[in-house]
Amino acid sequence: MKNMSSKITLEKAYDIIKKPITTEKSTNLQQYNQYSFIVSTKSNTPQIKQAVEMIFKVKVNKVNTSILRGKGKTFKGQFGFRKDIKRAIVTLEEGNTIDSSLEIK
Image 1 (cartoon, rainbow, N blue to C red):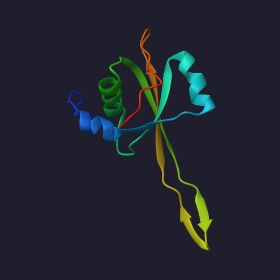
Image 2: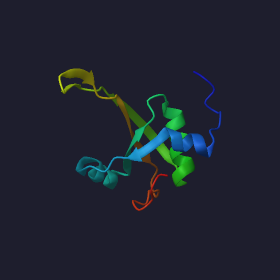
Image 3: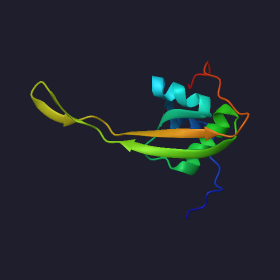
Image 4: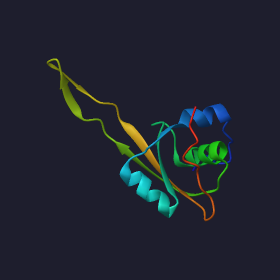
């Protein structure tokens, strides 16, 4: 495994965490202290953990990631693909919460 102790800057943290996911399913996960984010496709789990801890000042317990492959679509007769999206579900330790009014820059 690579060196996980390398610190990331706040600017890099904002590049990793793109935006929160606010669907009904992700809102229901918040009762289990889990929050969903769209993250950079090049980021890995330790970087996502550091970024969430740095931005929201919380303690992260676990990070699960999944890559949603872009669908094939036709637009004006041209066939193409949507972008791939990486999603992270972050589980926080007991007593930590992320205020839903916080916005990512």
